[in-house]
Image 1 (cartoon, rainbow, N blue to C red):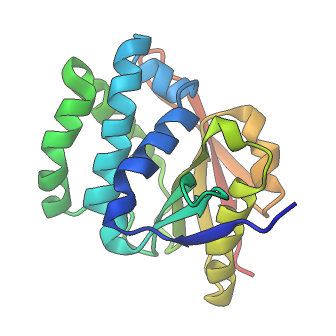
Image 2: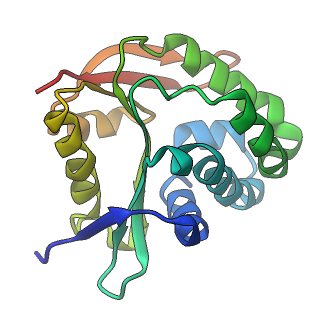
Length: 203
């Protein structure tokens, strides 16, 4: 298997990274719950990820992309550095128009999800893996593994823990291979899905 190139994202990568993550999360239980209508989900997801990348994760230096052999974006991660996972008031203000365009009438559902996950978030300083995804057309080619190892190497260099929420129970063993362990379950109210909180101790 050829080595996968991973590099920090820049502003020009935002649309492609948003599209790749949207494709990766099209069948995600959380996204299906937030957007029951398939058409609305496929319109809203690229807007959601593009907005979050542009106004929160990218300014923190937390976005990396994995490249396909032709140089296109095949996968992306959105990380937050220790102590920076909460969006600032300014970041929230700048993101609001994009979130409204993404969610439409479902904006309060998105807000309820975000609030529930935030309440369960650990306070101990850590690197937070908000999102990782690869285009379905390249799954199994090592892009996800390369993305995970890239930032986890930094976590290890800093002797810092890492945290994520898995929205699919079937993905838990995948994250366990990278050293994450389940620490609890987060149940989204009003018929929402369950997420698995996972923590990776410092190395």
